[in-house]
Length: 220
Image 1 (cartoon, one colour):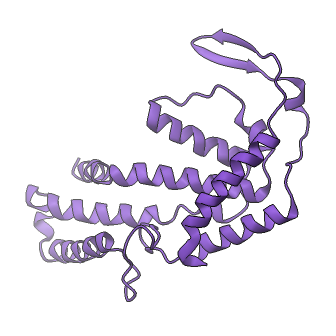
Image 2: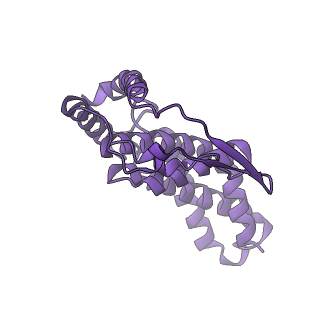
């Protein structure tokens, strides 16, 4: 089951899209007003009513099995990347990159201990950078909010964070909480997993820049 998590995820995506078509909202006229460069949408009455997700017991059972497979998949204990993306060392349970930065961190801490007078000098910059980089690797693996119940507000915040990172502004055109309320608990968890993975990849590609910023602050 663990080895086919992503295959099942791709299969689910097609089912999820089809399910979304069945539960699509009524096509009604929406009034869009512009105020201070922001757009606000007046939602149709059918959207503001309390809604219940349209699903089936079989579909929810499939989702639960898929989420369990993803949750139980072997992953790096630092950055959290799963074994279908990176090789995991069975002894350390770290991926190759995190293993490298684990060694760099140990060596850097030892250097700082042996050279306390140089710790905040120019020669100490590379060692502090390695420590900050390793710390970022560990922090990435702590973002596991999708493993528990996911609220509409949490999904909205995650989506807006991703939108800000990709488009440069934290703006919303619709009240996504109303839309997310139409998903079942399992559907919201899977959607949070997809958004979180996307956000983490964005962070990982900029990890060095973040480590440099932290190092700079240490030397101010």
